[in-house]
Image 1 (cartoon, rainbow, N blue to C red):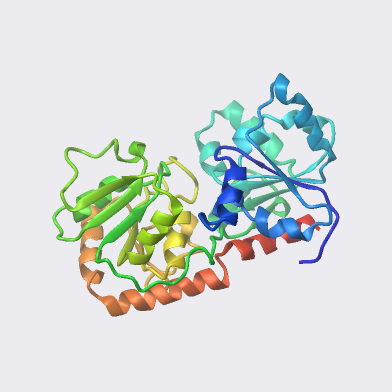
Image 2 (spheres, rainbow, N blue to C red):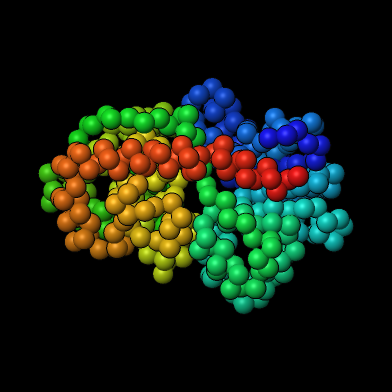
Length: 340
């Protein structure tokens, strides 16, 4: 990356990214939640800034209008941040770059009027970074110009997560996104003599019927170091997501956990979503099955769980995918090209 002088701001919502940055610098967290900020920051002569959790109210007015000094404003939170600050469009045309985390689902679920308002602003941003080709296709169908859309695959921290041949003999499933389908996973493994660990939030298991089977352990919101240990010692990682017909959660539900597991050299058994086509090649760097079908999932788990040779082969190719493309540095390099 060549050092350039543009003034750049990342606008985040949700998790405090100052904490995320500190944890990453201390080696206690991956850099996934920074969306490339840490890798791009050193390549600007003035550095780049970030803010977290603004709202359009009296106490934030000065901070919001301070955004006018930036050439580029990047945000992974269109609804929470971008729409709130949309009045800035009528004062100065900053070059807004939006990360498409869940735009497709938001547009699908919105009323006609709200969708028209969102599209009015989306058609006026500088770029929209889609994390999958399918997201781009949907936005093209909504009438957004192709010159505004760029596909940049999401990347995880390839240094925090490293290849491991650890084998604790268990299945691991990870994710707090509303698009997860743990009901199918529980149904698939309940009669198998395989320990299964699910790392999620309480909201993810509210739809489970009855008592959790004895071979299933539920962990809530553990820290990244503990999660990394679980990845490293899992024999198989299962990412059960709801089908594309559901509009819950992010557009690419399962993406982060899937890539983290692959970075640890684990075979990922994932349910099919069109938004993950750019990342997964069935029987090459992963195993992909039909969604919301516990019988198919159970059959596939029984077929591959004790085939350690196949699991290792796929796991090695999974890690190769991370090294070559799906890592945060590669993502940041492609984002950097938009800021020149």
